[in-house]
Image 1 (cartoon, one colour):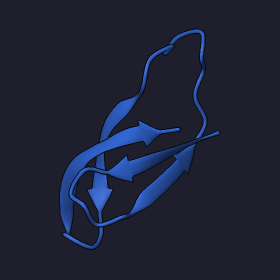
Image 2 (tube, one colour; image 1 turned 180 degrees about the vertical axis):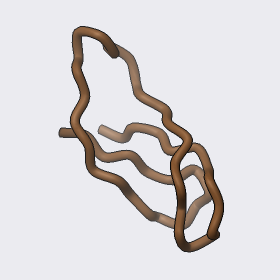
Image 3 (cartoon, one colour; image 1 turned 90 degrees about the vertical axis):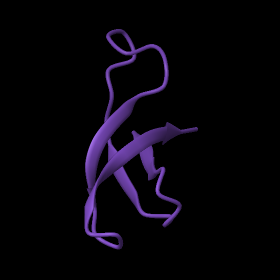
Amino acid sequence: MIKLKSTAGTGYTYVTTKNRRNDPDRLTLRKYDPTVRRHVLFREER
């Protein structure tokens, strides 16, 4: 289980799972942030 935190500075997070064998480094995904109402980059936090 990992948390994906918005880079827009809103503090919005997604919780998801990740395969550590396929993605050993930090994950970045482009997902929807409802507080700014657009798609932004979400980065994995540890």
